[in-house]
Image 1 (tube, rainbow, N blue to C red):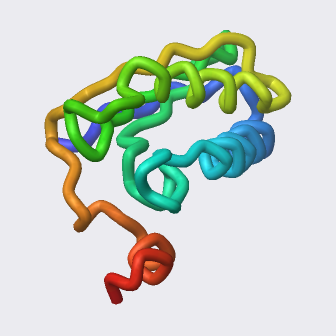
Image 2 (cartoon, rainbow, N blue to C red):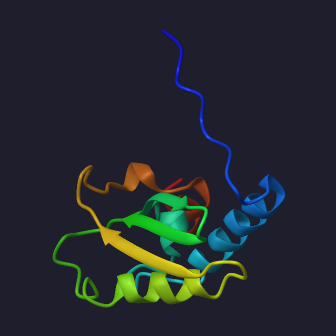
Length: 116
């Protein structure tokens, strides 16, 4: 059985690509205060969806559920995403399944933390 056809977005692909790249750039400006690496390279961003109304849904996690900035970090991520031209609204969802582990970190993050 084949996959159902995905509906085309009302946003042109080139603009979706630019918004995606700009979101990544902005996510890289947000850092976990306890780890000197940005949240994108840490692998804390699990999913980003952009709908036709230019609303962005972000699923993200924290390095630990008891993270001292748990109440603040979603707001930082929302503010970062709203700086992207073309994004109208943002909702950040904190999720803990699957739990974060250092295996989600990029090689860049591992190198920064002397884990390679």
